[in-house]
Length: 488
Image 1 (cartoon, rainbow, N blue to C red):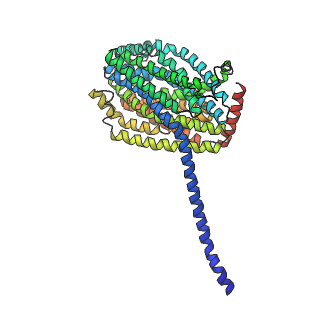
Image 2 (spheres, rainbow, N blue to C red):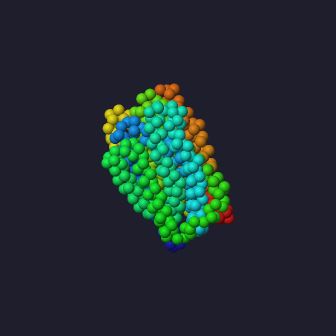
Image 3 (tube, helix red, strand yellow):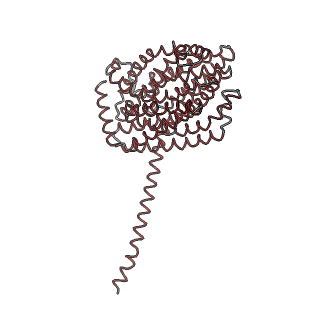
């Protein structure tokens, strides 16, 4: 039958054509996905790369200070560690968190092309954060009695109080440096932040050598060095901003910065509570350790671990900044799908880096503390804590990135409740229980706090992010930009 002969070959080809077309579509989709990942990664690393460098440089200043103090003696190391981790760390977390309101406002305004608003927002942030610094001054001036009240040894509390007084200029630098950094990041001017951070790091290394080794100023000299380097950051970023670096977003000082301050205070407060609850969490860990037996060695060992963790945390914090800017820019432009995709790429990249450092800590667990101390007791104590340090780094490769998504989306008030519940209603009691009730010491305190608090908080933030309606968030962002524009 001719008809059958003519149609059979055609019929036999149809499945093959259909299958081939399916494979072609899948390959094209895969190539399209790869292109999207590459494009988003390029945008993300444009922010994250310089942010990692600037944060590592800034944190290295603290590590250098701690290292110089560690070679002066165990008491000096403990004093500097408590001053930086408890006193400075307390207001550092609050002011850093309050400044992160600019990541929401400036990021969304830049995405919506409302450039004038960025400069006004930054000036409002300066006003609010400077007032907050004044209110926090008693924390520095009364550090010694405060620490004695919390059970610290007298000699340690007295020396920490002296160090804290010399750190007051550092305290006020935060009010200007944090807003400047977020203002520049939101408009993708990240290279200048890296260059200024490098200059500040070089100044810090030289001044530390001069004050400690040449002038023999002791532990006070190590504290004073931080004032020089952090104000280099302030004047460097301010000079770039004021003298032509930001022609669209900086049009000069304006009295409009004093308008709408109350609304700005509320958003800054929500941002501050969200991040400082998280930042203070590990400061409380150091404080609780100070009440253990042989507290000096325990505090030294834990402070070294926290310094290593903090050093590595500059990478997730850079992703925090990067994904916050990317999400805010996309939402401000009305692109909910773009914000979702930026979140996926940022979390995946940060987790991969976290796994690398997790393995690194496990491999070099017995050599971690050599840069900070030559005390055999301290070296052994750090070695025992290295496993917990590795898992803390792994968990923290996810959690800050999800917090950055929250900042970019304006969820600060919701995440503040999550942090309060996970950290202080679950994590701290569990750390106390394992440290004292089960007599596991510093390992018990730390294990209880990371697996009881940090792990649960990370799980909740993951669920919040997965269930997010990004199109709805984009519409809310556009409404918020219009609202804030009306208050300028």
